[in-house]
Amino acid sequence: MNPLLLAATPLLVQGTAGATQPPQVQTFDPVARAAVMAQQLPRQWSGTYEGFAGGGPYPVQLRLKSVTALGQMVDVRGEMSIGPTTLPVQGNVNANSDQLILLLLGEVPAAGLENGGRFVGLQGFSLSGWQAPRQTNPGGTLVMNPVVSGAKGVPVRGLW
Image 1: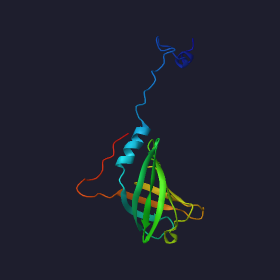
Image 2 (image 1 turned 90 degrees about the vertical axis):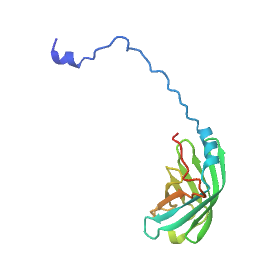
Image 3 (image 1 turned 120 degrees about the vertical axis):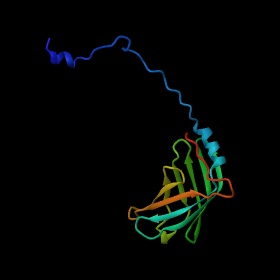
Image 4 (image 1 turned 60 degrees about the horizontal axis):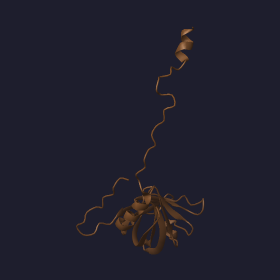
């Protein structure tokens, strides 16, 4: 037999043919995590918004007035101050992926924030981008941190 053909022929190891891996057990419960997030999510956030087209940075304050677990989603409602303008906001956080969608119910023309746009984040409230309703608006970046009150310290987020 040709040595090249022998090297290209896979050898079967006894005991591996037909063997299957045991199913993996998923211990993560996004519904339970959403309930915990609804209780522990900081209600006040502070940060800055800066548009990609220039202008800013604008100081931002977010106050969550209502935080409710709905299945694996956390419904949030409150108000956001961007510079001198305060507007209502509503949105949700996915407890499974930490994805945030936050609608600004109004507009802040000086910052380039228009009706129909939204903040989308892949790390919860910490870092998100503005998705404008029009392609001519390049959007921007919102960087937020929880406001620490009293001597409680910085909230610790567990790894899920």
